[in-house]
Amino acid sequence: MSEEASGTQVADGTSVEQGAQTDQPQTFIDADGKFTAGWKEHYVPEELRSDKVFETFDDVRGSLKMLGSLQKMIGKKGVVVPGEASPPSEWDNFHRELGRPDTKDLYKMKVPDDLAEIYDKSFMAEARDIFFDSGFNQKQVDMLMALEEKRTRAGMKAQSEAEVLAKLEMENTLKEKWGQDYEARLQRANRIIAENTNSPEEKEALLDVIGNNPIVGDFLANVSTKFQEHRIISDPEQIAGMIPSEALTEAKKIESTPGFVLPDEKGQFLKDTNRPEYERLEKERTKFYELANVQPG
Image (tube, rainbow, N blue to C red; front, side, top):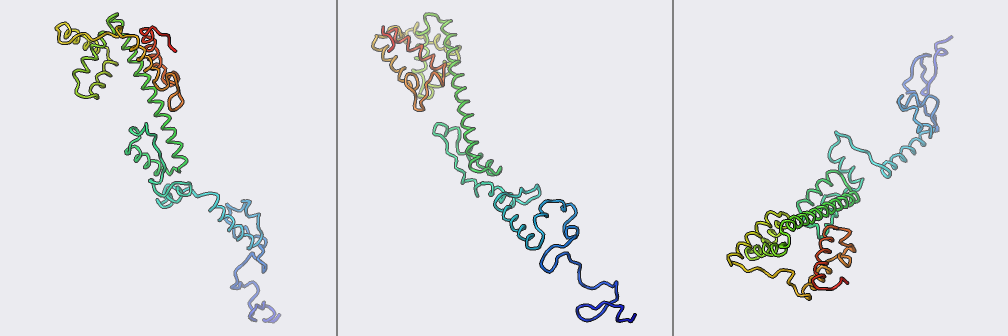
């Protein structure tokens, strides 16, 4: 066999020895862009070859179309969660995609008027910081604020009921100790406070002390009694000395308490929201009606 016959002619007319490698790379794509046998083993990493996605196309055009579709789905249907080592900018983008506002001041957080002293500016600023740093969106903030308001109102109701119960216990303790002198001694204690305080705030604070501490109430009543004995003060008119019209007026005042007879501004009744306070007012109203010699309407 001649030297020319032993070689293989290539495109440029030159010849090479059989078995010798050309400079052309091996390919698994034909002239029409179709993948040929062995393309997965050559192009796809071994750990990914079993994925179903590689069975949805068989040419270059199909693979590029699939890539573009996946990219659109990532942009519209989901977000990539940053890792622990991700920079702050990636976390900001992630929270923004989930609905967090661009700045914490954009959170809408309306405070009920009756809770303004509790949810003051300091509280709201701290809450906004926490919500923003946690990546909360407006809907999540609304839910948390509603839950916080519910918790606060429940606490306020429990505290109010506890205070009423404490006053009722104080009243029962003093009534047991003072007996028939209860009304007169209580008025004397209140008079000592009223005539020796410089502001309504001082008066209310001391009256609260009497309402919660029978020892203080007893002490002031004793002081008042000593003053009376030494003619420093005269005994005030006892409640039993009320004329019927005055007693009836006091009974009507109790009935005008929001929620006692008619529902309050929220449509609630006192007997449902604060039972101890309702029972205390009901007891006082009955006493005034008895003094007025009139049956409750």
